[in-house]
Image (cartoon, rainbow, N blue to C red; front, side, top):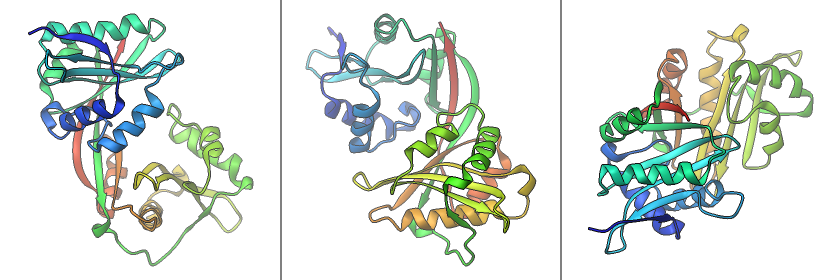
Length: 289
């Protein structure tokens, strides 16, 4: 059976293929999700390179169906890899698909993969490439019917005078993350919300930042943190429940998903108490060329 490697021509078609693959744990990859509309939106926003080309490659079978796919969410010299997704391509053809990514983007030097624990085939593939396992992560899911009502409210909307203290906490707790403090502040609007917990004299004890996409009926809790000096008082649990209530108040939001490190036992207990349940378990890998 002849198979052809090409750039993805239709994000709608690709999104449906990725959705089908991600509905099975043994072919599930990372944070792609399984809603085709949400996947298509992310592909449109994050997988188009500076030349306007799709940073996603596919293998097609003779009948024209997609057999395998892989893409890069590129940030300068690093990229998060979506894939490999492989439904029917041979191993050597999947390797050619990966090589097409490398040849097309020689400026990318570091690659990160997130692969479901049950996706043994792709774990083996990235290990053969020389990727190094770097961590274990849980994708947690909270449904609206598990929401716990809040009796005490502790947070307020972020104000300009909170900026210095917020920067200090965020950049200490999350020193190497996708949004630094300045980026979060620049993104704030009616659907990208930062709430802070303050003392009576305006000291900052903690914060939570979340994003709402009402068009896609999607919500994501991006960051939540309590200052080290203010921990073990129950503030994290109260703040989390309060934020969840506010997120679910947006029309159409029925579930909330987040990813956590399995090693963060204290935070994970807080999520469990608030009603989150495990959806997927991922291994992270890094690869340098």
